[in-house]
Amino acid sequence: MLRALGRPIALCAAASLASHAHARSLEQQPARRRPILFFGDLDGTLLGKDAALLAFRDYWRRVEAPAGSVLCYNTGRCIAQYLQGVEHGEPGMHTGRPLRGELPTPDVLITGDGTEVRWRVDGTDAAGAPRYELDREWDGRIRKSWWQSGLRDQVRRRMDAHDERLIADINAPTNNLHGGEARHAITLSDAARAEHVCTQLQAELGEGCHVYTLGGWGSPAPTLVVAIPNHNPNPNPDPNPDPDPNPNPNPNPNPLHRSRSPRSR
Image (cartoon, rainbow, N blue to C red; front, side, top):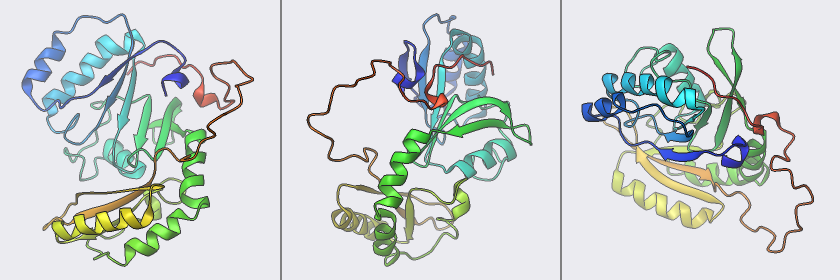
């Protein structure tokens, strides 16, 4: 991603904004001259305390956006959930109200635990919401690893045998804007059993797949076991690759990989 941005930039990761002390410290930050690439999770990091979120929004507009900094959200939520929560205030995004105008619009949006990357592009959609375009290079790699390799079918076959189906539509095709996510989840009521199943599935599915657990939602909340393709979908790279005949730092013709100017928020 740093290469795709096409300009010198510092890297910054988010800590929780849940305390008033963090909010006050943001208000005291001077103007910045060197741009940063800011990675932030949403749930429990940027979301959770309204005052802290507004302080971060004002800080970003005052300090980082004018410096040309790049804002990236990296969330486990699917793209449909993110758009519903931010634009329409669907339940589950902490506030229960639309976050447009409160949560700064990101330049880069990573959803589905890293399986989808989108870039903010100019203009808005029919509802006036920001527009994002899928990163075609990353999407191609994920599709090759998840669908074309047959991994998706293998994952579903092995995982569904353990599923207690405690959350409806958790793998709904509508979670993704183009026919389903490159991940699969099942639910179990017992956390210890979920950990055991997770370990078993990881051994069965091998290095091409990453299997993990996380807390679910509802009452009582089940434990989720989730599988995604390995985020390095080329596990056996050529140890002696040919030299790159194109010294251009941005050889990909995808316009999403070209340098982009900062946007005000």
